[in-house]
Length: 445
Image (cartoon, rainbow, N blue to C red):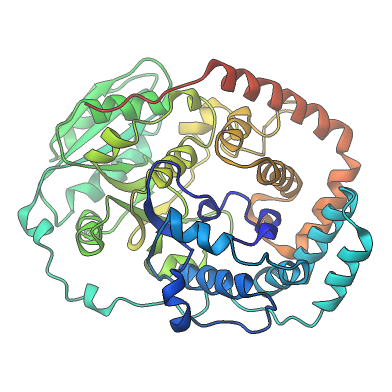
C-alpha cells in the first residue's frame, strides 16, 4: 500500500495485513488479476500501478479476497517511488493534502531536495473521485433470500440512557418491521428508571436493568443474555424503515458475510459520503447499526470494556473483526437516521467526539482513542492519526472533512500548541496505563 495514505487516512484498515487469518477482505489484487484491472499509467512504478488499481477497485465496491502470500508478493515488487506517493495523494485528495504531507515530511527532516522535486514533478496530477464509478450488484435486487425465509431469531440490542422520548420512536419503528422473528433486548441505564414505559409496545422485549453507566458492558451483557444466532446492534436515538432487519439479513445471505455494517445518515456533521450508496467492504463498524453473526463473538471476542465511558470501542471491535479475516459488508440498504440528540447517552459521560473534549486541558484526544491507535497502528500511522485528529478538531465537526479548512486548522494548531501539547501528554499517559493494564476480550461461549 502507498505509505502516504497515513497523511490522509491513517486508520484505514486495509493497509494492515490481518494477523489471525490467511485469507481476508482486501485492497490487494491478486497478481494474476492485474491484467483485468484499470491501471493508471501516470504512476511510474509497477507496484504503484497495481496498488492504485486495487485501492480504486476496493473503494468502488469490488469485494476482493487476498492472502498473506499475495500481499507479501505485492510488497516485494520494486518499491513505490516518492513521486508516485505524491501522485497518489494529489489524485484522490488534492493539492492541499499533498502540501500537508510535504510540510509533515519537511519538519520530520526528510531530504528537502528529494521531497520538493517529487512534489513539483507531480503538480499537474488531475484529481479523481476516490469512489469513482461504483460497482453494482444487480442480482441483489431480485435475490430471494433463504435466510430471510427461514426467519431465524434476531436479537435487536439497544443500550439506553435517559432517552425515553427518543426511545419511544425507536420502538415504534421496530413494531413496524416486516421481519417478524426478533426480540428486543434493552439495557436500561436511565436515572430515574421507568419500567412502566415499556408496557405500551407490542414487542417481545427483554428488559435488563443496569445501574452502572457502561455502554460496552451493557452490550456484552445483552449478547450473553440471548441465544439468538444474529445480533443486531441499535442506538436509542435512531430511526429506520420497516425493511431494516430484512435488508440486514438479506445482505449477509447474498454476500455470505458475517457482518452487515449498516450506514448511518447523521442529521448533523459531515456531508454524507458517496460511499454510502453501494455495497463494499466495510471500513468501520458502527455499533448503532450493525448485524453480527453470533460466531463472530466466539472467534474475535466480545466488546472491549476498557472503552467504557470513553470513545472508539466500536472502532476497535471493527479492527479486531478485520484482523480475524471476517467478512463485513457496508450495507447502504440498511440505513438509519442518527439523530445525535443533545441529551442522554454518551453526552452524559463526557464528550461524544473523541477529539473534542468539553473542558480546557482535558485529555485530548480522549485517552481510549490513543489506546486504540497504539493497539493496531504502526508508529508512523499512529502518530499521523493522533496529529490529524487534533488538527482537525480546531474546526467544527461539520467541517472536519473539508480540505479547504485544513490549512486554517494547521495554523490554529500552531497558535494553540502549548495547550494542545499538555492535553496530548495527559491523554498519552492514561492510554499508556490502559495498555499496561491490558485487556483480553471475553470469548463468547
